[in-house]
Length: 151
Image (spheres, rainbow, N blue to C red):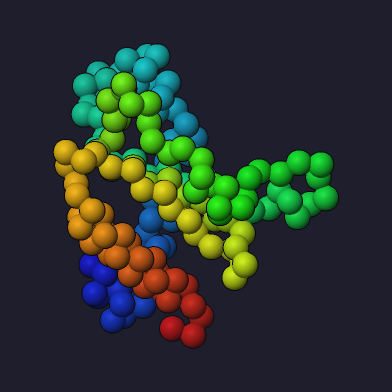
């Protein structure tokens, strides 16, 4: 479904979420065998497959470490996270035309989904990324509305 339909009818968004959840649950070994089948065993159907052009890497919720009384925790300060270099090695080619790295982090307003965007300047300009990030924000908001029991 497109974002306009999900915004207009949250039940469609809920159906989409349930469908994705069922599909992910059906993947054997949570997809962990792909690298083995592709890189080690060289399964022809996988070894010949084109490399993906988009990376979406969800790191999970990284704001829990400092709340457990442990002696250490992951870096959760958004200012420090933004200060870390995200650019790939300048002498190496980009593996993906577009890369999104997402994690839930602690902020003053509470846990928030933070996404780092990396892209090829040869493929995208800032207006493309602004348009895509706006669409992603709308999509996430529509899916959140779909999980609201009142909708």
